[in-house]
Image (tube, rainbow, N blue to C red; front, top):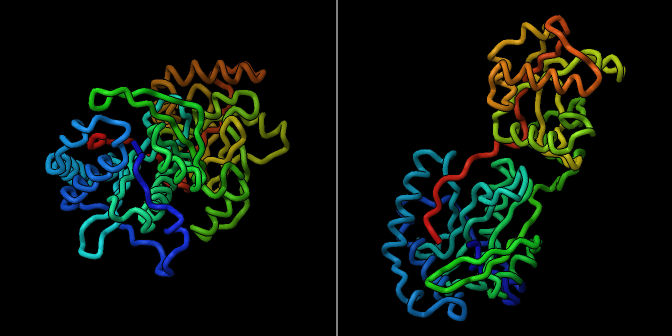
Length: 355
């Protein structure tokens, strides 16, 4: 649960003029301190929610060793694990931590990450550690290619819920009940947009140009056009994960629209099924081939279905047919390869250290 930030209060909002606390990436040797914060935050936040015998039985040392193992694995292969951040205390200890990764709920849609946990040492409540961690978590999620995030918070934790609501999160209607310490604990899911673009193609393009210095011409479009929102969602999701790096179309489409064929160096803002801007791609290779000469390598690069040539041929015969064109082996096809340029590919989640 991302449940115990407790870092934004009237006291904190008044500020001391010293700025936000520093936040850095967690290291394996932070494990014991994170375990201590984890247990202390739960004991302070959940006294009215979970049994005292359960909370008092939480073992900081054991929790810390689990964190050390998780952080060690993440340091070896960070792409396959969630990212953990800490606020270091004045004495070099840890005052709080946050953990972010892929969303674990199947129903949240594409391009959605998750704030898995954010806990602050009770003695540091009101210090600004919570907002600082949340801001860094947001940056990390954006860096992994997400445009929205979810989190789960205990329903009977009003302090945490007020914190998230002040920071722009809102309940999305999902609820669940978890058994924790032998007690049924009801949780609610919150959701928040991440990227400043918030689905706007012009703003996403402005973010891309500000980050890369490139400000040439570009187009905005969705896979399948406006006819199949579900297909657009599915395929842009494959682009965001790095699975889809190619697409096929018919030259007649461009002729009908009075547009030139794509060319290497072209940039596009990809939209999802609701017209929201998700990413920027750059065309790297274009070749017009007869349908019957499209090979296994291109089919695999398209990243759809089981990525075999047989699947590709069957799916594209049906898709082109739905657009009014019956294809045979001689029908010319525009085979376009591209690279994801902004943001970076969405990364998979790794194991959570529990709780």
